[in-house]
Structures are given as C-alpha cells and as structure tokens.
Amino acid sequence: MADRIEPQAPKIEFPCQYPIKVIGAAGDDFAEVICRVVEKHAPGVDTTTVEIKDSKNGRFLSLRVIITATGPEQLDALHKDLKATGRVHMVL
Image (cartoon, rainbow, N blue to C red):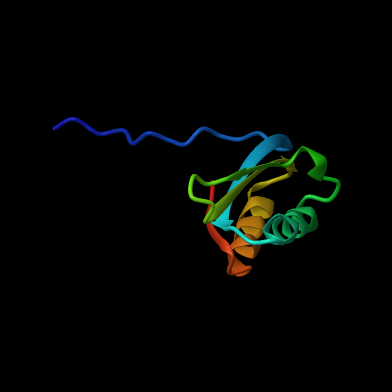
C-alpha cells in the first residue's frame, strides 16, 4: 500500500497584500459597517479602492478590499469580527 501525501495549502509570507471578499445582505450601511471592521484589523487600509458589486437580483452585496496582512492571527480575528456583525454570509 502506497503512502498518500495530502496536498498542503501554500505558505503565505507575511506581511503581504491580501485580498478579502465579503458577501452579505444588501443594506444602506453594509459597506460602511464592513469597512469599519476591516480598518480595526488593518489600520491604514485604503477604503477608496474597495470594490462593491450588487448581486443579480440586488439582495446581496460583495465587497472586495485589499489589506496588508501581518499574520494568521490578524486574518482569523478579522474573519471572526466580520461574522460577528450578523450581516456577513461569507468571507473569501
């Protein structure tokens, strides 16, 4: 029986530019809420470059922002706080 080698996720070298996509229910202040959370974990992020897209039927919004990631702890805390808003369905 041959040993199986499980594929490993690529290692990320920090600090690095890291794109994050956040998807949630559309609302007037969705982008503002998300940007506040992102700025808390990535101070100095350029929120003028945030890309916002509506879903086909307008029920959802997706925001794409690029942060300077400093480590896995930062990314985990950011993900946790985004989900804690109660407005985020998915973080990619």
